[in-house]
Length: 178
Image (cartoon, rainbow, N blue to C red; front, side):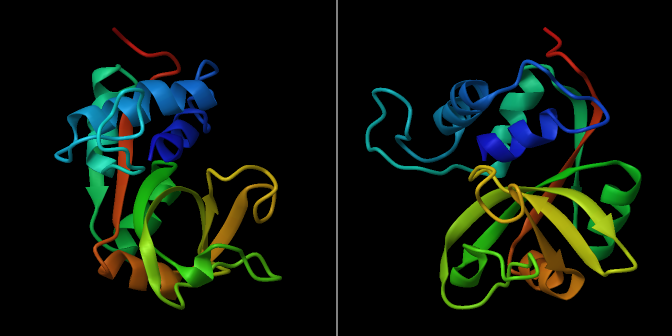
């Protein structure tokens, strides 16, 4: 989740040059784990140890750090299409399926196989003509197409209907505002 939000913070048009892996992990992800409703986390001294947290906890931390003034949720495929098209990137929290671990030869992930948990990923572009979204994953440039993949409108709709979430940051800043 911290990396999905971190990717949004370094995205155009308001690129935050100070956000890197350590910042995303320590300042966003670990702090989100401290305020989420579950005991423990992955931060030093956390008990019990676990990976993961909610997108909402991460959004609250990033807002408190002063990266944006407000946020809005998308509630379906059309909201996501319009939001990415007019506002820019969206942070997604999605159910993650076995068929999503590696993109196919055309760069697409597919929600097939069994659900293995949840994952936060950045939706960074929409292509209405090709009927797809471009997603940026947090697993490095060796994953997918230099860290990116595609998902069709139809499969994104399926993911959003399975309690998926999408959030947009409004009035974003290039630097955290105290």
